Length: 158
View 1 (cartoon, rainbow, N blue to C red):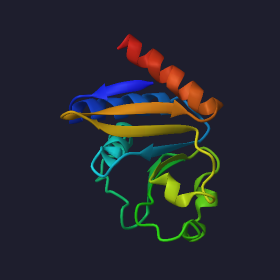
View 2: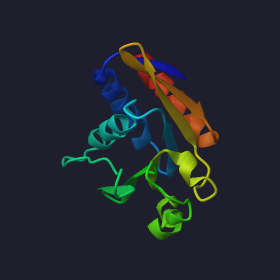
View 3: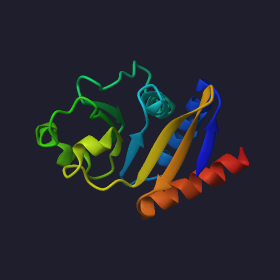
View 4: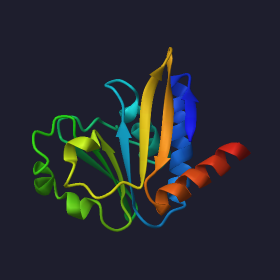
């Protein structure tokens, strides 16, 4: 699925739409985000977190590597592995516990955690496209295919 994001508002709208689709799921998913610095990875995750109902600040996990957010019994984890020195550091972050159950997990720079991260359900690649951006959403599992199908259906009705 390819989406043109002409403005920051379009990125926020995609985040809100993804949040609506994710709210329908009871099981957890892991979504990776790829793209150059400044391409909008954190902005997209921030829009998802806010659309899910988080009222406080949403900070980039560039230095902490992981930021958790709670939504009732469900948690969302936002990981940014850009500064990860060694993939084994993920063991100290408790990544095995983070990815279990009904959690929503978003990982920026996932390739830096290769071998220690569980398989992704969906991969989102954000790229510069003139003055705007574009997003390519690719399924990596049955859950990812389901997410994209529901997102396409939702966006076609709005």
